[in-house]
Image (cartoon, rainbow, N blue to C red; front, side, top):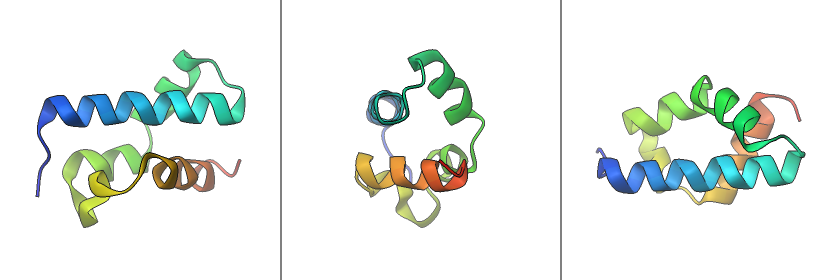
Length: 68
């Protein structure tokens, strides 16, 4: 299942913002890492309905992916 592209972009922006806040990274650093992450790939492709998970859950996934 694929999400509406506009809604998906808004969700990704919220994820990047929350991740930056939690880790102390700048928004730009978080965005660069996010768009090169496996988590982003799974969200974009609709694998396992990752785009349906909460923003907080997905930030936790990113933190595990990057061992933070």
